Amino acid sequence: MKNKKIGLGLISIMLAFFSMGFVDLVGIATNYVKADFNLTDTVANLFPSMVFFWFLIFSIPTGMLMNKIGQRKTVLLSMLVTVAALIVPLINYSFASMMISFSLLGIGNTLMQVSINPLLSNVVTGEKLASSMTLGQFVKAIASFSAPLIAAWAAANLGDWKYLFPIFMIVAVLAVLLLGFTKIEEKDADIKKTSTFAQCFALLGDKVILLSFFGIMCHVGIDVGVNVSAPKIIMERLGLPLTEAGFATSVYFLFRTIGSFTGAIVLAKYSSKKFFVISVVLMVLSIIGLFVFHSLILIYISIALVGLGNSNIFPIILSKAMLYLPEKKNEVSGLMIMGLFGGTIFPLLMGVMSDALSSQIGALIILSIGVIYLVFLSNKLQADKVA
Image (cartoon, rainbow, N blue to C red; front, side, top):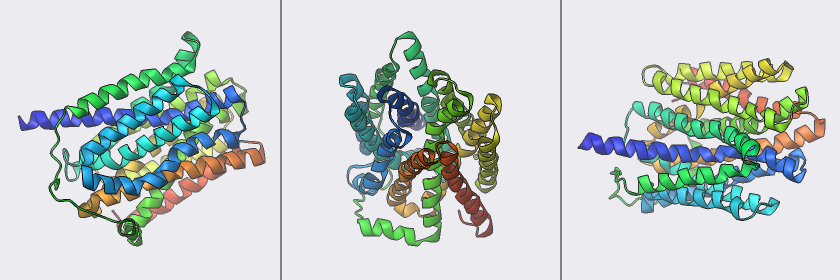
């Protein structure tokens, strides 16, 4: 009976992970919105920036909220906000309404990102946590991978890419219902812990936490940056229309999905440090390829490599940080998820640099900074035995 409850809890959490992947529709949606409203790169990149801006504002408060209402209720709240975000474009489609939709998507995703991993730690414990988090990222990546395909299919067969929103909304409602009827025993639920902003930010004074925080900033900056810029690179170099170039985003998320699935297996048996180094090497090779290649196949290979490499960075860093300070896992989770604010900084800088150079080379320069930091972090993990 206990195993049955654990199994149902894991299934409900994995469906929530799938709903978390809806945030990645921002990449392909930004390209369609840019075309619909004839926007510059700088203005269009405000959309993904708006999504990830809320990680800066709400991550720490969400960690504090979890201490009061619990992790499961926080995840449920996050999915309700996500449902609201997906409804907005169905009511009205304009620049302002899409800003509202993406803001709600960002707020909901912030709530979920902070709360879902601590909730998962009540079902899966110890060293298997990194593997289970990676499994969650694999499930999330399926949603990320499907978004551009559904948008392209809807545009071609239904006449409007925005049918993507009601399709995802139905799944989000199902996720709310399943988790709502699933009981998960939260460890230390009877202990009402309180924390302040100062106490949460004080954790950055720890070397491990600080390095991990910047690592997550770079991870998500690269993730969102490639998501948004991959179709633009292909359109710029090969002159393909968005309906064809948009598949570059699916290539990225396909290989992120493959990488997450592989990582869930590998991390259950082998060292996460070595796997981290291999992941970073793949990303270095990818960035070099994106700078020099002008062939569609070679660009796709480069996008695939960054998808593989970036797929396991987040769960490795987050799980190690939470295991490093288990008594502060809610606060650590909130602080680490605040690092997803990198998804705001990177697209903005990429848009400005691309417009300044009149080329996506500008975007690649910014992405390279994130990759260089992860190279530095991988060396620190090895040398200082951090994590």
